[in-house]
Image 1 (cartoon, helix red, strand yellow):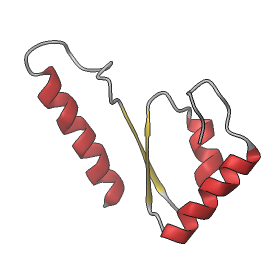
Image 2 (image 1 turned 30 degrees about the vertical axis):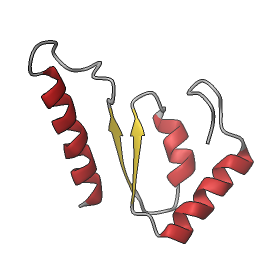
Image 3 (image 1 turned 30 degrees about the horizontal axis):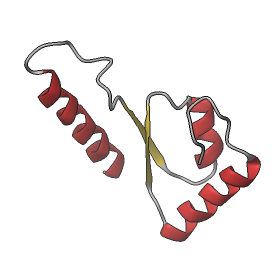
Image 4 (image 1 turned 90 degrees about the horizontal axis):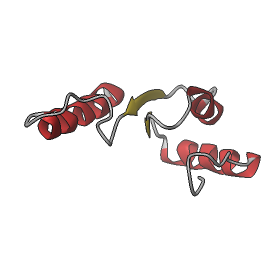
Length: 84
């Protein structure tokens, strides 16, 4: 929808995203933690969709040898939760 997280999507971009969501009958939106809840709600408002926010960089992960496997597991869990 936008080129970077600081840029706000235009009304046209939001309406286009909503049109695509409806046409694909999407049931789940997964976004990165950098996307604000307000921005997500603007997109999925009245669409009866689930939403999960994921940390794809691992900012919230404890550093160490298990960091990458834990990151991948957390991402997989978020997708699973959203799609159920």
